[in-house]
Length: 454
Image 1 (tube, rainbow, N blue to C red):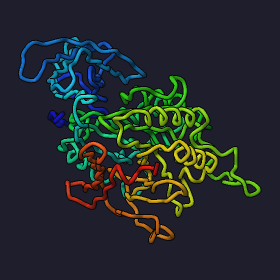
Image 2 (cartoon, rainbow, N blue to C red):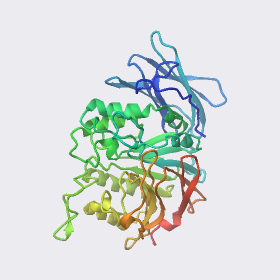
Image 3 (cartoon, helix red, strand yellow):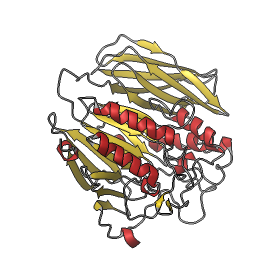
Image 4 (cartoon, rainbow, N blue to C red):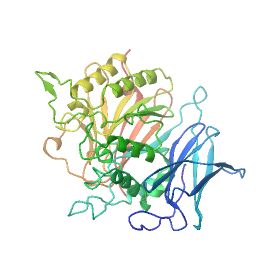
């Protein structure tokens, strides 16, 4: 399902040129909806001519689509919006890129639109992939010593998965010291890492949505004071095909629905105050310490209310770069921003929003944290990390974390999350998978376990 294969070719001068023509990276498939889909490519020159030719699987009649183009410095991007599709239908496409005196570039792909199941059939079973912390070495700009980037063949393994989409959980590329204070550097880092040959099969094999964390936003641990935050937002919006980016001016938050799951994709950087501000003042939560910001938190609450009223939704996944619940770690979690943490939990409790789980990255290990807030069902935070960056070992207070129901350290991994079962009895199965496809552990929760007593 949703698979095509790309030919891997060599790296030239740190920026990829496809030997058969002008295609630099991609095609990358964005979210595939009921009636439309989006495809992203990067091309060598702003003047290159790009077209996408589409036909239903098994048929020959073609439609041709032309892209919206954007350029920044020498980095040139094209986005095709493919409209007029039918739900639950498979399509084949070809992207062609030509330029004066250049050989034609051609790449093929395929996708299937979402099924229209509402009011007709039970919610279809599906799976998606997830993970965070993707690091590609560049020795002249990396820290001296042992390379921080590990085995990138994990992306080839992921490309072979038969999943509906990939949800990137932040640190999707790593800016370096040479990039932090350079607009060009921020564009270069994203473009260079996106063009890695080993990444291309995954980009085309399924749809992609994303959030960010500090390393693909800017310097380590930075928040609202980063003076190039607007550039970072522009880069993010040009490299991902999310349904929206914040309110159109600030932030990157958005909602994405797939079958019977609502995903709330959060921004943990744009409004974030300095992490080491005191959590409390005179025994009360510090009102001046925020991670999500008033605008985003109000948006999330309204979206959760709307989701609650949708009779077809079984799970509500809040995806955020930082962990949310873990009481043991002393840093980088929403709980260290207690005004917002308790406002959100109290809102879920008071409004009786069923089916909420958190999905996070960042930590360079994978784990599932469980807490039991007063007056509600258990809350879980599923952390999945790293894809290809360095790993670490559980230590200190985290070595035997009493809130951890599953833990995996010192191993590259990604998550495969599957939703299955009959109506009102849906199950979420979380599997952690190694770089060669080996099973590293699993955990599951049912829809019924995440409901308020009424």
